[in-house]
Amino acid sequence: MVTKTTVGILGIQGAVSEHVTAVEKALEASNKPGTALVVKHYSDIDTVDALILPGGESTHMSKLLDKTGIHSAILERIQKNDLPIMGTCAGCVLLAKKLTKEDNDIHLLHAMDMTVTRNAFGRQKESFERPIRIDGFSKPYHAVFIRAPLIDTVESTTKVLASIDKKIIMARQGKFLALSFHPELTNDLRIHSLFLTMI
Ligand code: GLN
Image (cartoon, rainbow, N blue to C red; front, side, top):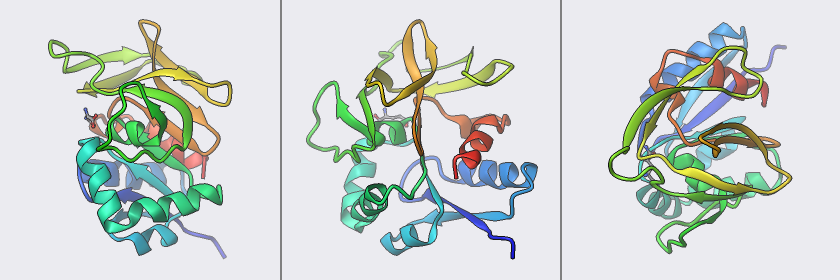
């Protein structure tokens, strides 16, 4: 029997539908039988093989994660080390072990050994797009940044996959992938495809 992969996309806040489309296309392109599931309830977490934490507002998302019980459900799977997670933008913030500037409104998942700075590009550069180099990708990737965080420091457990101007914007640690930009806003499926190989 062919097993079907279910990729959950946290659907309580932020850019959800674009990730659903990207996951569906990436599954199709990789010939992997599977589906995308919008996660709204803590019990959904038990049914997914992987999870995407989308961009949005990390303070708001964190509050809703706590309120819905999804935060604890994710933590349980993280502790069992059986849930690959991709965090994009606000999702990258939530995956961090630490924030450069502590914020009591954000309850981190402490999944990756990295310190993240929120809204790191300042007002003038709140949103911008630019080609970046990603380790393992043969061609540049066009990245969209929206009030993006930066990964300030990583420990030796965490591999840096992309940087701009010496600042880290993408990193991987085992089953976890963090990026400060929005891969769901381009038609380039390489990052979602990379995530599928981590499942
Ligand atoms: N600035 C937001 C935060 O820190 C992230 C922005 C985004 O996800 N596009 O939550």
